Figure 1: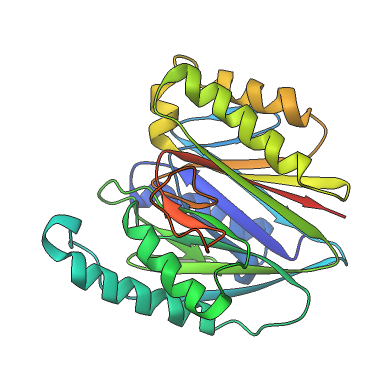
Figure 2: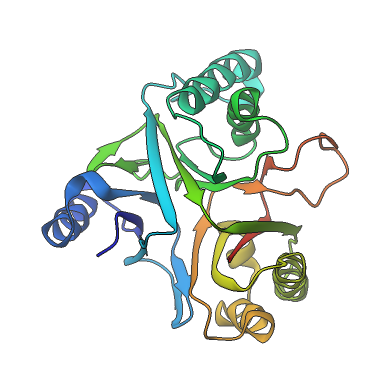
Length: 279
């Protein structure tokens, strides 16, 4: 049995989301269930759009998970156009609070952040996290579905809005991160393959899992959403476990010029962010 379960779901109303959560928590203990509302999920079996759920289990002796929740970020209803300074202050503070809740150890390898803070707000949140974790610590993750009534994150089997969660993975494994941006069909497909290829080539150990936080906007530019997955699989093959979600903002290595060159990860949109885990 896994010691941590990550849930990604795409349902329109809260009642359906509650039923999904209830069902998953009848199989797994509620206190190991985490996740967020998305625009769909994908794995080696295929892509799922609306009315779907994806689950990833984390288990085994060589990997441990610590989790943190930061409630009441205080950004609901605030816009970048009218409240930029307030958003910056609250999200940086919230990100630092979130990361500070986690005990650090010498075997910490990767942080996964799932938040109700869509692009470009996710950059402020990440900057707060990096104040605690350092700019060079590997961080990936995604922003929850930003549609009204769908902005939930899930922590220990409970639903929260205006909140952020972090999973800190530690153990005897290595990570490799890569990200690419695209805004039209052919480039979405080719950039996914390029990013996956870069992450795999930079992994010196044997890969045992791939995480992908992808952009819902990229998905919307595809003529056929399976085409991007096929491009990814042309690089990764179909044997390595793959877990991906379509988000409203992504964290990882940014494929843009206007970024902090000293930071490994940025909070952006229109990206696919791959993390390869190896041992």
